[in-house]
Image (cartoon, rainbow, N blue to C red; front, side, top):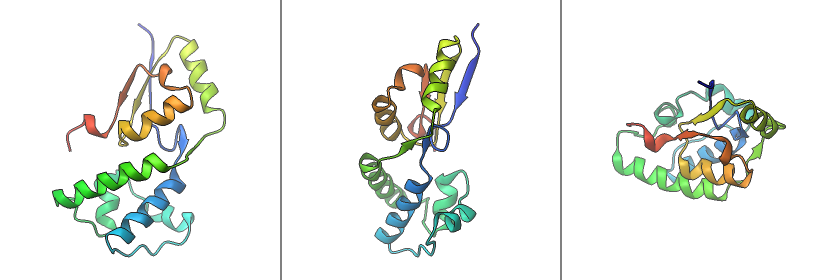
Length: 140
């Protein structure tokens, strides 16, 4: 049986931290919540995983409020559809080499399929993943 390698999307394939900074600045403004961080370095210090719900709660969101959560996801999908994230240098070559070696590749992320798959297609990487598990595949 071939080996299986499971990887994450954000922070492994795409450098999405700057986009996360912009996303949280946007959603805090939209919901009239304070966002006192002016730099990526400041934001990195308070960035906690799992982002859903920990970081939202830290920033003052009521993650148990289904209406608020629904509006956040609606805005998130709009935001992600407009973003231009950069791939980490040479990660495409690494993924291709892993695939050529006969190992199976899977992606597991708290991100959504709708946010990940367009980037994977655009970068020509979707074909290398045997399985993709996103936020909507797991119980919340």
